[in-house]
Length: 485
Ligand SMILES: [Zn+2]
Image (cartoon, rainbow, N blue to C red; front, side):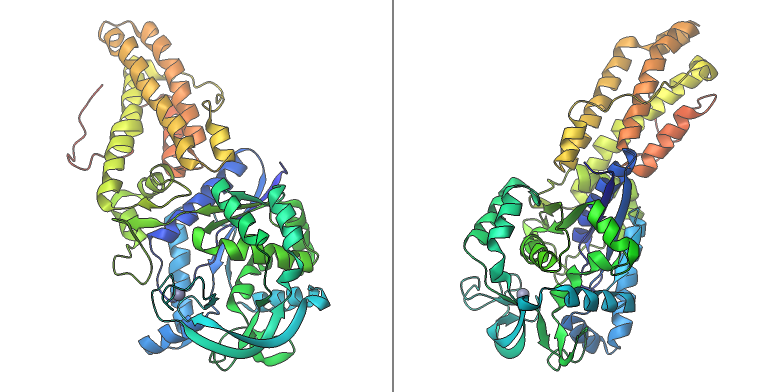
């Protein structure tokens, strides 16, 4: 594993405000980035917004505002969401930035000349997706994502010779030079490539896009197809085409965190474009599932699009991160609801690690805290690193909560409060010290997931003397916390 890691989220469309589904992608990418940092690696974490889509024009028209105003407003909301979720971004890339236009122009100029040609294109198009569908993928002539009628569109535009790359791509994915996670998705990618690849259109008629988008270099009648422009953001954010960018892209282990609906763009189109441009392909593509609400996909257009910031305000950022990382299966669809979020808060946070921290620190205070030392951080619990190497955030967290459960059990066996009650402070401290050290280790390895709680626990245990910590996760039902020690 290289010592440089480049971790990205996709860049969402900004035709509507963010919903809880994108919060999942943000916290997954953040947990990966923070884990790399914990291991001493140099990390860049990047997110951003995809602003050149035609649907922004439609949304702005519907609201009676300018397109620029619409994308400014909604881009700011996505950035605010990342901040509210404590996502440790190094860079936020907007695709309406001039630097991005320059990067797109430089990237297209690098493509092998024989890979680009002009031709007529005719296809079934969904304006919601801004994508063409094959007749075999359409459902009764309708978009499989939106359920809206597909429109037949014909235009003259630029094509990329994707058909030249299936052999190379298949080898890269099969050899896991490009590692697609999970394996079921890898098989899907391999089977898609194995059926042969058709060339893809990489520009759109500028007039049909109402002039919104990046003009195709040397052909103002065309704009760069928004999906191609969007992929290049991963290079723009590194400063491409200037100096350091190539170096970081070349040296780092690149990890794209994406949703299951966009693997074709990331695991097929993007590596082929990079090969044509003579740039390294990404190392890892981690494909998450969708959040559902009673079995239905939560999306920006559905009315139940929960505003994730509301949940952060209600229960705290760590409660939301904890739910998304521990109780969502990372690669499959998972149900999200306020009731499930609250149940996880009560069981794992308030009664779990929060209660253990309160009890232990209270006992330390009673037993003569100044004499209690926290030893060096211990090894991670068994299975923790393995879980994270395979992006199983849920399993990594389970190893930590198993340790919390063991600590609670051992506390119940050792009963240091009996020693305190009878004035045997040396004995009480002897029981407490190893438990305190182990809780400190749990907090250390917890920090990629729940950075605030981890910092508060470690801060409380590092204090001299150790004092009873204020509740990390106050009980929701009963405002006053019972003295349970
Ligand atoms: Zn669609």
